Image (cartoon, rainbow, N blue to C red; front, side):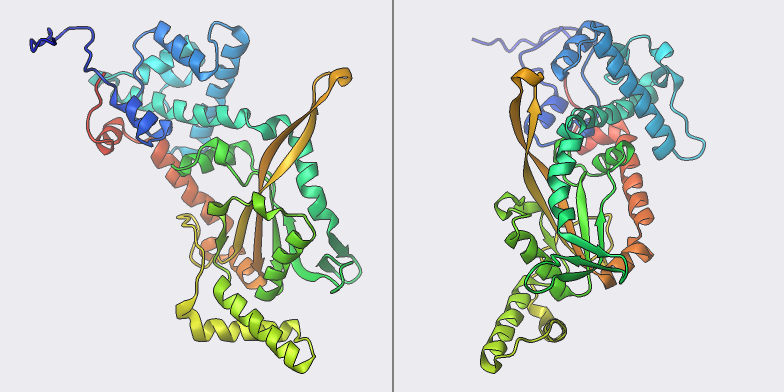
Amino acid sequence: MMSNKKPPADFPSSVFNFNRQMLECVVGGVSALDIARLNIQSADEARQFTLTYGYDLADPASAEQLWATHRRSVALIKDELLDDGEQIPERVADQRSLGELSNLLIIASSRRLEDRELQRWACAILRVMHVYVHLRNDLFSAFRDEIQLQILKPLQDSILHDVQSGTTILGATGPDGGIPLAKFEIKPFKATASSVIKLLARPERVALTLLDKLGVRFVTQSVFDSFRVIRFLVDQHIVSYPHIIPDQSSNTLYPLNLFMEVMEQLKARQTASGVEPSSQEAQALLDKCIEEHRSRAEFRERHNEFSGPEHRFIKLINRKLITVAVGPLETQRAFRFFYPFEIQIMDTETYRSHLSGPTAHNEYKNRQRRKARERVLRDSDQSESEAGGTPHG
């Protein structure tokens, strides 16, 4: 039977002693990036924690990987997140001052009032390091060339660029002569720093769900052509729609319910007259329908606080089953895995607004950077308050 007698104040442990930060992270749905502090009191605890994390501090090669990540993280904070006049304390930014990486974890766990600012900076560095570690160990870093080839080649092969006329056509050899495009773009690969900022800016994101590292953009002449692009990609088996990630799809370009209603009207008109309506007639009917029935429009919008309301587009994330050869040449075997890529489709009007005004890329990135700064440099007391009180243990 348990005794009701209270243990001495300096009692080293208790069966009732739980670390709230740990529980919030494990079962409370809180990202490790958003906890206020660690709970590591000694170098031995730090080594055990880091070993479970995936790195052996006793192994020089493993430790050097973490030191390199530490240097990159300090540089990113200095270059991207600090305001004028701000500086990271040398005690946590400089390898010689830290001495051992275990000290960074111990400082990030401190509850001493005099360590408050130092503890905040240690946590900031560890948050950025955590994202870098995940990005470095992503499948893309190991199989970049194979992933690019197997995802991008079918898309590129379907595009015809006519230098003389200056036109770009999707599926030019098809029975309908193809779909004219205003532009076809392969999204530039996100620089590592850009990927880190994005992940830090979105609390629901972790590196394993960075889904737009690879992607393409179709800019069409009209909304009607935008939907034709989707049909072409599926019919030509460039996109396998069972591999679409459903909760990542967005359509703010034109409501699907109204689009299908207009298509039924056009099919009926064609059956009655025996003449196929032109693309221009289809677009005119789409414009009229949205003007008259906007109250019934069913868009699919995924909230993105960094994009402006003018940013209208269709976006989907497809997964491609990638096959690569691994192992020595004489015993190579096939290794298969899914890798996501993004497809964006928009009309020329939206694309022009994307290049200027509130949805301009630089403004978008600045909003991300401000959010990342807020998350990385948050005050520990604020973090604990948002978590529901001071954690124990």
